[in-house]
Length: 409
Image (cartoon, rainbow, N blue to C red; front, side):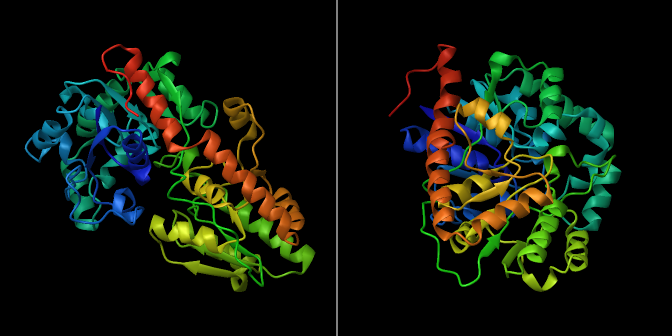
């Protein structure tokens, strides 16, 4: 089969596309965004610019250029309509009416939480350009809320509703999105509960021999609720909870930690201020924003990985850390994951500083225990959350309609 993709938020669709290729399918992949995080070379060392023929770079200074006729949209759909089926991400569902082939939707965050919510349309205007103040001012002047509603939000909702399948995180992880999908008209039989990563790209690596236990978190520093903005529960990572848990461990155990964090997130300044107030500043090494390739390397250097402790869900970073063989401390939402897998999760569950501290007290002094948890984590991700499993799930929705031939491979 020939499967087309449009959109690549955080390289999540690209992971699925690579899995499709491993299953024997031909892939055409349209990269729509100039943002570094949404480009495959940011994660995959074997992908570089100029892209190979199966990857189409349709990015433009105007982030939503395909919403407007004459900015390359016809060429994009020439590629996609030559496929047997298409999977849409980012603003892709808003463009579904231009498709002549079956399609599914892979949702990753803002494409449903913001792009498909009419109440947040006005928050999108400054984001129409991923460029400096002059561009944002142009967007405010020339992209009124009525344009956003007419060209993006309402078509996005219609595209989601009419798709063969709607893939998103397991039900219950983000209740506000579950309600929004119901409001849009997504049927239970249409919903695909997906959470996955590329285990081949994150192979198991035996932990290093660090003199001081090394802690790493790649999760963005976004944790203050700001009503009236585009922040959603999925964005809130509980970074303050993480810092308080680390500080509690250090005060109780009087043992050093080598803490590594990344300078990214909506509340970076507030996070650094809190770290100083808690006496953590000297314990933390701050890294500039890095590529996903560099994040994978940081997992290999770490002994323990921390993820989100807020109202979000464990994502690619957490799964990659587990696939690498590192114990993961996070709000892993075990009540949801155990429903999906029918197995206990090896994630060290924590939603409070006290729980983070307790896990650290147990595993920091015990290298053998960390290794055992890491190996169990790797096996768990491989069995339940591989990109190949997700690819087979998506293909099953196309095949169930009787319009596509049997799966390759």
